[in-house]
Length: 450
Image (cartoon, rainbow, N blue to C red; front, side, top):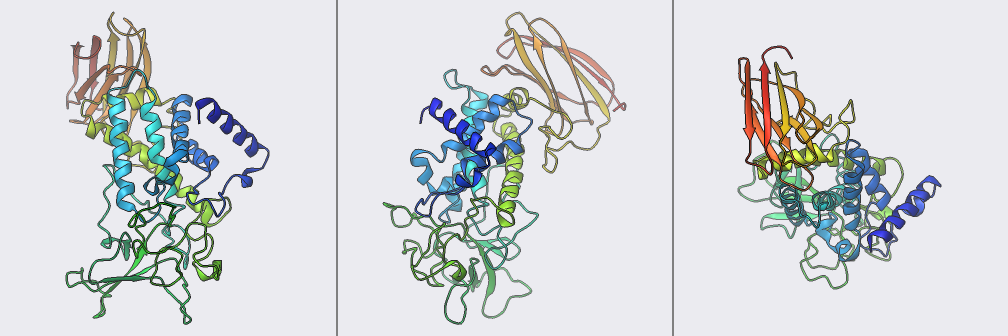
């Protein structure tokens, strides 16, 4: 789909929302195996998560998110949190994160929006997880996990091995269980599946001892995602056990639960292998609302993860400076890149005032984004400074904390400078000519006045 067609489609969808016809576009039909949160829901989650971003960057992220439901991408399970392919989904997100940081550090002249678009790509599947798994739904349909994100780390995604303990009594279900471990869906006295939460029984000798352990083994609940087998899939593409089995066989030993389709013509939704299991793609209250809400919280967290990865994967702070200097439009009150409830929320008060003035030289662009920030991303300040003029930004920091000053235009590497906050008063001038252009910095530190 070309960009003009995509813009027209999104305009028509927005008009439908205004007209109150959202329900017509929220779910794909039962015959659409790759159904997911509708485009409108993905867009709403993303826009609600990032109100502080510039209009252009936010639109690019939304477009990238939408791209995952186009063409061949819509049938790749690892991009939509399906088929119990947790490892592949994490690998895909990590690959995209590396590409995003690379594009921030070295922007391509012919594709300046690459980083934002790829960030949208990786957000799609992360959001889908909450509608395509048994994480959110209330028992007996799901685990009803509350107050916890699927991943709250700040480094690349790192998941436990399949059938190893994730937390509490929850294990990841991926592939056939190893020797000593069995898995099945709960069933009633007539053998009909009665829950979408698999029972995992670990009888391995080296299983971690638990207070509730018995001679029969340790019992866990299985975290899994919906199955969306597609024509032409190779054996093993479907990683819900038993691997390579027919997902339509409705027995407790077949843990594969379809995404919005029946497994067997003689079953219905009440038998827990009927329509809609692990499919919270549509509109509504209850579990549907919770799936969208937690997807938004995870999306907000991914911004904080991106900031930290931009520092860890690019210690020069060029990538981080571009994020905070060119992606951010508003930093005031609740509309801030330092999102409350994430590790990047505004931190506790600091003691020392750090004032950094920047004067771009004659070889600088006409105007340059200028931002200063703490290296833990809990505070920042920004402005735009013109060539051969001076602007001053102020931020508070503690002794030995790193404060980063960057002048990073959208399409060039720019200049970065790191100040380690001293314990005593300090004033100094620094002329930095290592970057794309010369910048003179004036740095003043005044202790104990913040």
